[in-house]
Image 1 (cartoon, rainbow, N blue to C red):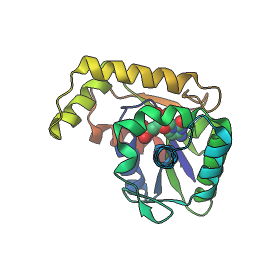
Image 2 (image 1 turned 45 degrees about the vertical axis):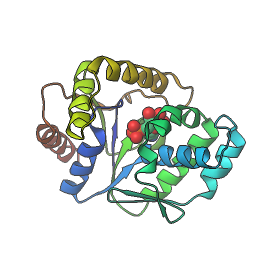
Image 3 (image 1 turned 180 degrees about the vertical axis):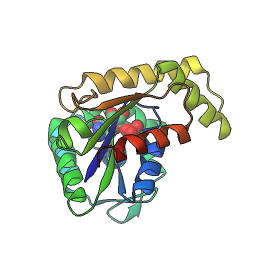
Length: 215
Ligand code: C5P
């Protein structure tokens, strides 16, 4: 069984999807971490990120392992290095490459064959698992997402204005919504959940009720 959660950056998908998976006794797949891993390794190896054949070769050849909140690429722990601002800024070049998306889609499908999964990303309900048991499109207003991000950063000692975060977020939203393949869009049969005014526990409770209603 596969439950997909798609939505824009900053909608809180990862933590909500992880908690939902725990409650259901399912595995959790963070597909953004896979795009981040390929981007990080391509940068580290000095590849031209727009060289689709080179990046595809890299993506096909690496073994990406996701365990709890850690990410391993060919046995190396890349959990921290895939989340730097440089990787986030460059990821769009990799995410725009249709052949690389096909490689990662195949990896994602092969992971879920033997277990129940909650998967999270941009294209899970549309491209990767069109027959998923339940599809959620999780979103919030741009201002709410930027405010949440500011609170998160502030808690870790980084002070950034909401305006700056909003500008970066709008850019990422535009890039994610406008790519030719795997663009961010709600699947026709997805349930859209707008989380403005809800805390994380309320969102997880709501999604659990939605999913259990479909099982
Ligand atoms: O979810 P996260 O913010 O870690 O994803 C990073 C980026 O990876 C997204 O902004 C998007 O460009 C790309 N991505 C994607 N398809 C997915 C997951 C992530 O294109 N399924």
